Image (tube, rainbow, N blue to C red; front, side):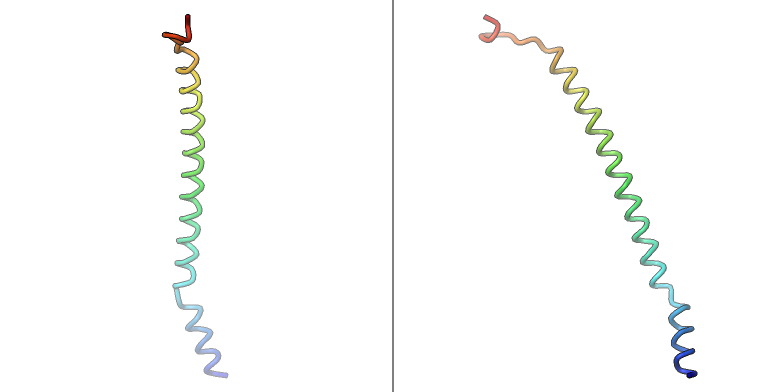
Length: 64
Protein backbone atom coordinates (compact mmCIF):
# COMPACT_ATOMS: atom_id res chain seq x y z
CA UNK A 1 0.00 0.00 0.00
CA UNK A 2 2.87 2.32 0.82
CA UNK A 3 4.40 1.80 -2.64
CA UNK A 4 1.13 2.73 -4.36
CA UNK A 5 0.86 5.89 -2.27
CA UNK A 6 4.48 6.77 -2.98
CA UNK A 7 3.97 6.29 -6.74
CA UNK A 8 0.77 8.35 -6.67
CA UNK A 9 2.51 11.25 -4.90
CA UNK A 10 5.42 11.06 -7.33
CA UNK A 11 3.00 11.12 -10.29
CA UNK A 12 1.13 14.14 -8.91
CA UNK A 13 4.36 16.07 -8.30
CA UNK A 14 5.62 15.54 -11.85
CA UNK A 15 5.25 18.63 -14.01
CA UNK A 16 5.73 17.02 -17.44
CA UNK A 17 2.00 16.59 -18.07
CA UNK A 18 0.87 20.15 -17.31
CA UNK A 19 3.80 21.54 -19.29
CA UNK A 20 2.80 19.55 -22.35
CA UNK A 21 -0.79 20.73 -21.98
CA UNK A 22 0.35 24.34 -21.72
CA UNK A 23 2.41 23.98 -24.90
CA UNK A 24 -0.57 22.44 -26.69
CA UNK A 25 -2.83 25.33 -25.64
CA UNK A 26 -0.21 27.88 -26.75
CA UNK A 27 0.15 26.14 -30.10
CA UNK A 28 -3.61 26.09 -30.61
CA UNK A 29 -3.84 29.82 -29.87
CA UNK A 30 -1.00 30.57 -32.29
CA UNK A 31 -2.72 28.55 -35.01
CA UNK A 32 -6.00 30.42 -34.46
CA UNK A 33 -4.24 33.80 -34.67
CA UNK A 34 -2.41 32.74 -37.85
CA UNK A 35 -5.62 31.56 -39.51
CA UNK A 36 -7.38 34.80 -38.60
CA UNK A 37 -4.50 36.90 -39.96
CA UNK A 38 -4.29 34.93 -43.21
CA UNK A 39 -8.05 35.18 -43.72
CA UNK A 40 -7.99 38.93 -43.11
CA UNK A 41 -5.00 39.47 -45.41
CA UNK A 42 -6.60 37.29 -48.08
CA UNK A 43 -9.83 39.26 -48.17
CA UNK A 44 -7.92 42.57 -48.18
CA UNK A 45 -5.72 41.39 -51.04
CA UNK A 46 -8.75 40.15 -52.96
CA UNK A 47 -10.51 43.51 -52.68
CA UNK A 48 -7.33 45.37 -53.67
CA UNK A 49 -6.77 43.21 -56.77
CA UNK A 50 -10.43 43.53 -57.72
CA UNK A 51 -10.24 47.33 -57.46
CA UNK A 52 -7.05 47.48 -59.52
CA UNK A 53 -8.44 45.05 -62.09
CA UNK A 54 -11.59 47.11 -62.55
CA UNK A 55 -9.58 50.35 -62.84
CA UNK A 56 -7.36 49.07 -65.65
CA UNK A 57 -8.75 49.69 -69.12
CA UNK A 58 -7.83 47.29 -71.91
CA UNK A 59 -5.56 48.69 -74.63
CA UNK A 60 -4.09 47.34 -77.85
CA UNK A 61 -5.72 44.88 -80.24
CA UNK A 62 -8.66 44.09 -77.97
CA UNK A 63 -9.87 47.72 -78.08
CA UNK A 64 -10.06 47.85 -81.91
